Image (cartoon, rainbow, N blue to C red; front, top):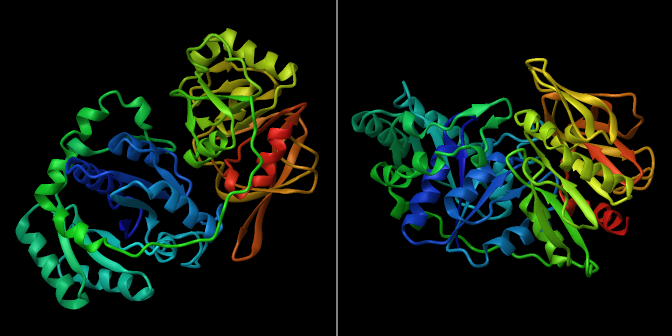
Amino acid sequence: MKKLLIAGTNSGVGKTTLALGIMKALKNKGLNVQPYKVGPDYIDTAYHTHVTGKASRNLDAYMLEDDLLKYLFNKASQDADVAVVEGVMGLYDGYGIDINSCSSSYIAKLLKLPVILVIDGKAMAASSAAMVLGYKTLDVEVNLKGVIVNNVKTDSHFQLIKGAVEKYTGVEVLGYFPPNPKFALPSRHLGLIPSQEMEALEEKLSGLGEEIEKFIDIKRLLELCESEEVTTDFKLDFPKVEGKTLALAYDKAFNFYYEDNIELLEEIGLTIKRFSPLHDEALPPCDYVYIGGGFPEVFAKELQDNKSMRDSIKEAHQKKIPIYAECGGLMYLGEGLTTLENQNFEMVGIFKGKSVMTKGLKRFGYCEGEAEEDTILSKKGEKLKGHEFHHSEFQTDEKTAYTMTKEREGKVIATWPGGYSKEKTLATYVHTHFYSNINALNRFLQA
């Protein structure tokens, strides 16, 4: 099958813009493109989905065991002409310093993905070969098939880099991309602004595929990305649910979800009804509620003003309808939210206390929670895998439901209390992948 991983030497090298441009160029050629993102990113996947018209998936080696990764990759790719995977950070960056721990390079080896490396060519010529050679030889099992040079203004400069890289490394250089502010993607505190908020996104990205084709040999790239399929014996064995409905919060304020989570809920038989905490008057009739992450702080006034929705969610809690909320969902279910401008807004009020925005990241990265009490996801003593990424703190006197731990190189480097459970409502800063926590999903459905 045709598949490739677009990796970078480091974060900020331009791999997201180039990945989107390559996806767009391939789609312009009439190909069915299935996008993926290495790691737990929700924003890049939204851009992928917008550009390709197919839901992008996360390939997360912390959350998912090898056979699961292969299974989910094959499952989503089965009707695609080409699978395009965007890497995370630099090619060998992952969890700690082990280059085989949750890195793009590990995913490339596991899924037999040819790798296209994006380098920044600004102010370099022959030295670029030393950089590429290091990436080629650090792990010879990584199939480094090509290089794209970003941030180069002229063809003459590009030819110097191309000649040096191909002479000293033997890796083919497929083209370059000059600086172009038209295609710069705006960002804020958690990274890029989500595609759902960018009204002019289509116009901004409309010419990206054509521009990519001017400077990068897409035909040759397709030739280089031919690779054998990966196989796995994994089969999902999960009891079906009949006649049940899950209400899923989905709008500009809440849209951080693993696509595989949503698809799994549908596959096991749940009817999913999406609702907007910003605009809808009330929850749809439902048996479960799932409120994911997002940017409630950006839409705090609108969330406050929609009192009928806040009342509806609180009423569902009082009726003991199971409610699971992640990160932004936790912020929404507290009594209030304080922005960086020190403005206070009322939220749902299931949990006492408020979330307060801060200027820096409070938690970042993979973690594991051990339940201190029974919740709708865990029995006491059970563990839940996930990741946290947030700038807010939840200030409350509520008892926490989990003891969170963060490890590095097999050693615990941090612990903290996390998550709040009340009746059949659980809210936590942790984002979790249901495939890595099948028992947790089963408990939620039985709640």
